[in-house]
Amino acid sequence: MNIWILNQQKIASVKKEWSRGIVQRVLKAEGVKTDEVSIVFCDDDFIHELNKKYRGIDGATDVLSFSLGIEEQRDTEDGDKPVGIVSLGEIIISVETAARQAEECHHSIERELEILLIHGVLHLIGYDHSVEDWEQGKMYERQMGLLGELCK
Image (cartoon, rainbow, N blue to C red):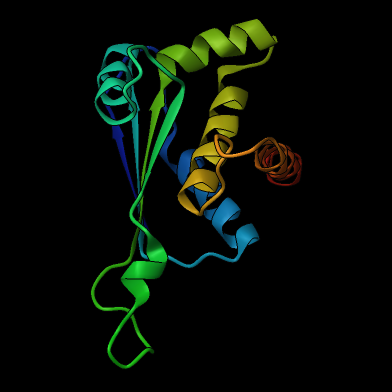
């Protein structure tokens, strides 16, 4: 599986192999197979523009996920093998916001990035906390469970 990482910020060092490992472990734990995931580490200005354009929210956020709908990509004529590369989607993380949140929560930026990577992957595979309260609780519970299991 290819995990493409683009680092567009200078706020903190990003360990690419460490980031790939987290994403791979979450996908394995969730039983999801894909050929490709993309991750962009950016600053608040970049994520602000995306948040405004795609969600209509005029402000920065910590993480955005853009799912490419893995199930739709797997539909083939023979019902057996996907055609071409199956990309799960893209995760965008503001390291600037992550650094602030880490400070507020009294943990390291690495811990915050672990949380955001897990959160982003869960969105890519269909978890959604904006639909109903029970779904938000379900996603948060799974996120924290994975954090405890995979990121010790």
